Image 1 (cartoon, rainbow, N blue to C red):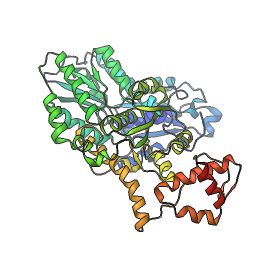
Image 2: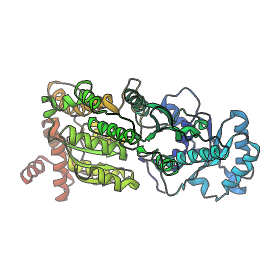
Image 3: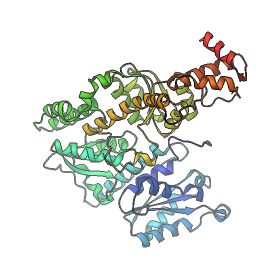
Image 4: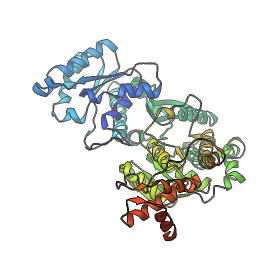
Length: 506
């Protein structure tokens, strides 16, 4: 547990709440102090949803701290069961409430006696896992619970559908461009003549979960959420799964070929190579654009990539394999996924960074001075301070990542969107320089050698005036080099003489 004003992944209970509120007619109750109940506001604001978020706080107040919860949690579960009539009530503790060491499983068992709804306690360790890990585990727990329940009641359907079908696992609240990505996956499956058996958890009912084994295979587009569920279904029901993220023309083709292999393994005579060829050469514009003279100008440009495992790895592959851009370093804040990430992109970049420390990331970016950054909203703020172009490619999400227009990152249309994002990120950097030359917005603010740089270095009036004469696209680099020189010489004031000395020393 640590105090921070920015986190790439939130606490565990947020992950559980994201899964619970994604299902239809599921109500979540968190045993938490009032400070932890910001999820409702966050979801309503960012997702632009018209319905109320089905989350209630069973507040840990001074009375609970003094006497324990007693009947409070049980009464809240029973009250919501009568008011909302949900199919499932899921209770999640928080780090704060866990300090009380109350037997929440006992509360769940007692409440289950009187409720019509099923009641579950989220099976996650709130001290050891983050938001993504908790979401992945909670989804697996719910699936496992309802498949076991269906098996006991002889309602489990294990016979396969007549036509090829798929479960798409991992569509859930507050995910990056998720709704548009799922729409693109639906279109892709339709083109391949594959029926959608179920999409979970977003908009799905827990009563549908007993039908999951009927699908021919599972598709897990995001590693962060859905992988545990797919592995469970493979182990218990021998269901194969595809976990190749269809992002960019190369990986989309690889994903389709993996689907083709599974269908052929089930004695279905299919060949999707002609579809891949037509989509790549004629439908998607990104493959053509990557060979155009405009994109050739980007060859060898330096970039850094940072985000969750799925998007960071996929973006690194697109930049290096499809655009010819040099990725100086690529990284992820999903520290638990280090082995997979290193295996996927280890040969595609100069260095791999695995950390959830945003200060370290900011300093690494300032140190290498890339031509462009592809990262999260935090890296966008870093880029603005360093006057470096940035494209946002990963959660944590901002309201900008829920566009009203159609903006998928998956499939062949997603490849077009990503190609635009990459190219515009670079060209906008040159645009700032042109605006400065011919008149436009102010681009003079630049920073020092690192974002966690603490020393007090000031510029006198003459040196500031000289700095403004330098073109904007190199001004930031010159300022940082000068401040670095001053720091090495233990100088707190930068004058014209210091600027010239730094230039000579460079």
